[in-house]
Image 1 (cartoon, helix red, strand yellow):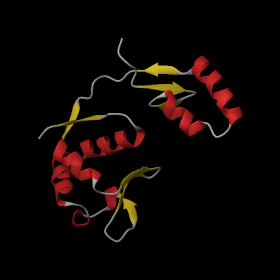
Image 2: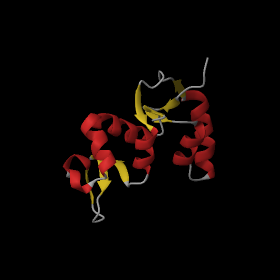
Image 3: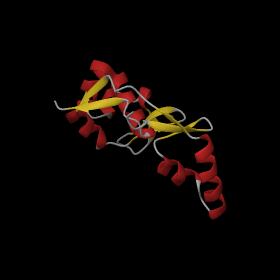
Length: 128
């Protein structure tokens, strides 16, 4: 069977044991407890191959701008340096290439950025 896409540990998803360790362990006591919990409770999970795609040129363009996923959803740092909800950003505040993509299918952009934020390939980057 192929490598798992990630692991669930007590209801929280991690891309790898190393990622979980980095987030959860801050001292030696926690390290010992972590290894025991991981061995007993970590459950691998598998995602099907991504069906959604985004052109590499768009993905490269998205890398240039300051997007982040917060508890309020997708946020964008606009030209004034203010972090605002992406859904409330006007089209003249975001790069033209992204506007063109969003006009076509903005949900793929959201899925791509959300996947990057959590370390999972929800959208496959393809040449084009």
